[in-house]
Amino acid sequence: MDAVTAEGLKQFLNKEQIKNVLVSYCRGVDRCEWDLVREAYHADAYDDHGGYKGNVDGFIEWLERRHQTIEQSMHFIGNCKIDFLSDNVAVAETYCVAYQRYGHEALETIKLWLGDEPLQAGKKVVVDLICRYVDRMECRQGVWKIASRIVAIEDVKASQQVVRLQPIWALAKRDRSDALWQMLAGSADAKP
Image 1: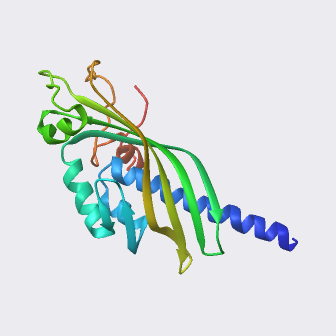
Image 2: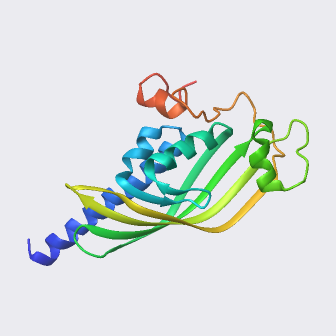
């Protein structure tokens, strides 16, 4: 194997490790697995999430508090361009769409999204956040993690939920009773 091929393979594997950090972060937020979120960051990392700017410990406390009133959360990441600045430093620009659903207990947050528009009885607020994660990724002791993150907001849309979720559907859960954890534990399958 020549040097160019070996270097290309190394860069490919590093990109895959970085992408795995990014999707693990999303899973952690959506399933309220805060240790998984913490594992995505170096201990001295900085996060600028718009509503929070600071260290990782404060960020996770902020997330936990906010997500107590978020009924459903799903982050979808798409295009991910990774540029290496050195063997151990890269910048990852990742496109993200986050969908979140809020009930009446989140009135303070709902007011942020809807202003003075009243939330109708029995309705939920659905927020679509379109952003890019601009991450400085660093490989320390052989492990890639986020060293610094800026969430660049592209657009936010909020509306009152029109369609009611049906109880016969496999509804997403934000804890270990979710279909993912049941399947991983071997206690769920798709058979009727």
